[in-house]
Image 1 (cartoon, one colour):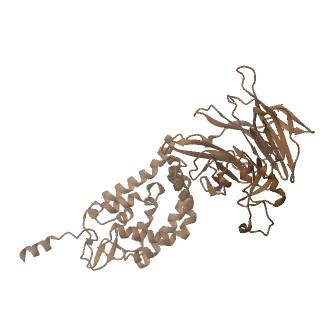
Image 2 (cartoon, rainbow, N blue to C red):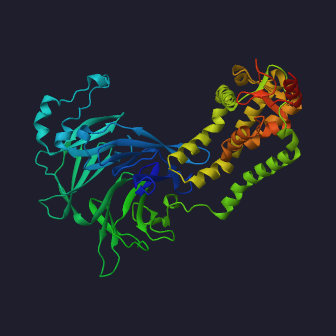
Length: 538
């Protein structure tokens, strides 16, 4: 879980059984409440063990166990939220931070790293300094501080800069948490010298204070430390009576002392593993608990004072897909039923014309599949600037489906129904484009480049009605779930290379060239009985 003033991210890392790869799935909820809950985020297949996830503004920064640093931002589409992944600058030596936090005011990442790593991070220079002028050497007056075991670094403007070193006598602790609020930095740790006690180390500007114990909190019981609306909150879990669930406690700084309160019991906690984060001015907590579909993430909201703001609820966006439902199957069957009825009606009504060879004139031939496909591709490229705004959501869904970030059935439903009006506008533009050119000059620009034109079954120019019928059938043939497959199959199997629109309108795509009558690019025309008699007489 990772949250901030704008968004709360939850994620799950698991193994994809199909590819045997480690994949992380994400869901997001905004503090504004416009989502009405968590919404799944389709990601570009982020895999690997995540060491740290921290939210900064509307993005989440991920640092993996191998030191890889990436960020994820949400781009809204018609049917889903897509995570735009960006590669960020890793730490020197691909180091993994010991602790991380975000300063909500400046939206900058802060990390505690070993002193040897911090020594390789440049100190911030004047605003006029360019990236090329950045130096990895520290000023002379702070060279002596390089012996510090830990350092604090900051990530801003896509580069790491060194902020301050820890005191030289500060030993690396067993457990460590970091909170940053402007110039105020607080480090909470469980040190070797102090046993299991929780200590705090605070600093302002370039000075560190003296470590101070956090009264009433056992350091080994701390689950997380978060900065919520400018306040530092410590979440801990204390074992209850025998066979009793753990008791969650929330500690906050009030009137110069740490005050600890018990949180209202979380039903079915069953585990001491609690995830903490921030959503706006509220504390968010989650845990993995039972659900009808198996273990699922439960999340609730509390005020900084420990009062429930929102009941604990299951994050459905991270539940595994349940497959097709009967209603979805019936909806998906509708387009196939329409196509089947149209195809059977055309085949029955025009069965004789379909079986007869083309009665073309001299120097005319039926165009083959390859050239028709090339002409179609050219026309799509020509109209792409007009079609892309409408097809972009479809392309997003297809990409997510191919990358297995959304189930195949969800993609089919989105392409079939949720994006219907976008698809209708795109196909309508393409249909109008084809109709205008074919009705006026018998060929679209793509067909003219490939030396093709549209004609009736005798090779004569077509009227507007035939061309309109031919192109209106694209509304069926180009329906998303078909992927142009019916057109391709019909062109390959019919004698005159006709798709469904050609069969219904009685049209052909022909070539003007030095080819005998009735021929195609693939097959010569059959000889007539008169030709055979003439050949026998000779």
